[in-house]
Image (cartoon, rainbow, N blue to C red; front, side, top):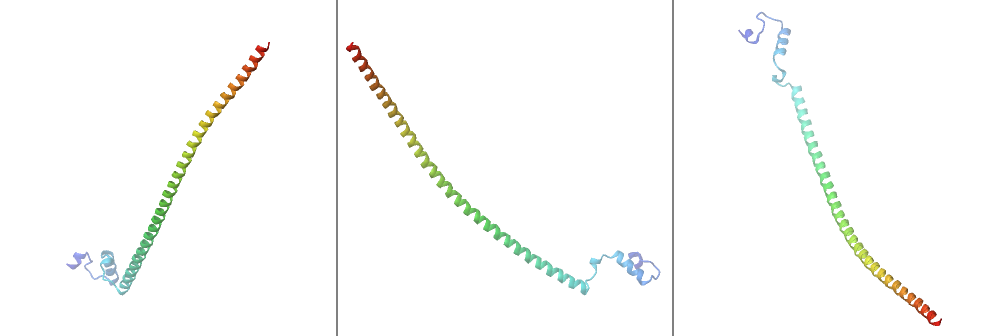
Length: 138
């Protein structure tokens, strides 16, 4: 009956064929660990533990790099904000100077126009007075 449960041959097989049947039908993971397997498991566990420690250290270094990078970016941001404020102030001063120059230029143009007009009137008056003298002298 035991042979029928495991589908073993009913006659007395040789030990090698029994072992082969056993290996074919029973998964190795269900077998009890041998001393080689237990040392291998201990090595595997030690490797896993070292890998976890290494991964934690790598993650810590990565976080530190990220934090340094963020601090550098904040520092750059502060510098750029200050530089921008400085440039805006400089632009404002340049605009004020430009407006003063435009205003002064307009005043000078008006003065120039008045002066030319005055010179023209003086020249015309001289011309008229010269003509008048010439007319009266004849």
